[in-house]
Length: 189
Length: 368
Image (tube, each protein chain N blue to C red):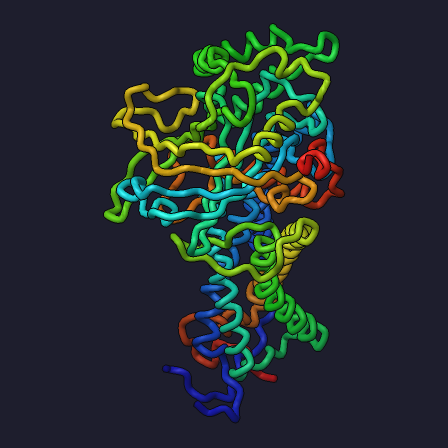
């Protein structure tokens, strides 16, 4: 691959990671918010929530490594300097939350003296000592971060939809899973 | 890849006509607010009347008051530890390491039902025993058992209603008979369970009480065969009915003090008995007992040789969630199980974040 020039689209691995994580994160947010209010489905949902959270953690680490190793397509000319700063900051926020939420969840179960059960007899070790106040603080943090992630997600899709449907700069094509012809991408910088 | 190098970028599209702009904004609005709406629905904000773990915990607090740091139910208790010695007979039914021959450490907590941590011990109170079995591979089996033969209700909703119907009326200090009558009419399965519960003579103390899993579970063996089971702890101490002297004492902590004294005198033991369901036995209704002739298998002995106050024991900060299970033990279709797990978690989260008040059964009491 020619790394001297900027690509039109995100790298194929980046695009696959983006969409698989989008599905996992959205599922996770809905499972999380539903399970805390559920009686009948609580156990089933928690049993998915724990291993899916760890899967997201693994994907988030892979994604950050991948992000550091790939060249990004340029910002479209339709984005102002301020918009570019906001986009970069929100990307960092999303990455930070993808890492923090599973880690806080894992730490919270450790502090709450729970076994961190994945599947069958497979468990993860505790990453924090059992401590009631620590558990309570992390439990609250987990909720706050989850709402923040959901808000960031809404902001993210709002911005992309605005660009795609109103400005019509084909921003979304940069993240399309399939390859897009360069003339279908607004890439002048 | 069909991507070809091109210098040509698509020219910025022309201005959108106003009507098109509006419809496109509407599409964005529908998508973004639609997702937010679904999220709010999933989180229960649009169905405030639905029964939730929060509402059940709130009802405990409404009836008992908030006692910081204490469990919302089974608030008064004392912590214990010891070991479980498996005789290997459970291994045919269940692949869990707990049933391999050998000994594993346990921590537990004896408690009285209700949300009042300083109430005087009463003979009629439900007695509870939570146990955490620490398996050699790091897995845990947690179980929270009570001394009733069956549970008074079948569903979380009935439980929620019974809490209110059986609460003492502020005026008379006793449950309102009219409310209980309505409850029983609406919950015929409870009407059948109450006589079974009332008809069982209470023993003189914790040490000679039986404790039952109440809910059904599933055991899975190495071949993948699944059995519906319930379990009980049967005391080695001889049964004695509770006497007036055991409760009409001036000591508010009579039942706990007698347990502490016994453990100091000698280790207490219970046989763990697995009852196997037959096809057709109810597993999703904890108000219905299984027939007496069901096969029972004694799989080991639980020995309790140490007692400690809630104030100093790690067991205070353990949630005896009945669905913390090792591989080989699984939940049944009993709707109470998931609900118990959810409400215990709610209670646990509330109390862990609170300042912890001293237990009625203090370290001085358990050290005596």
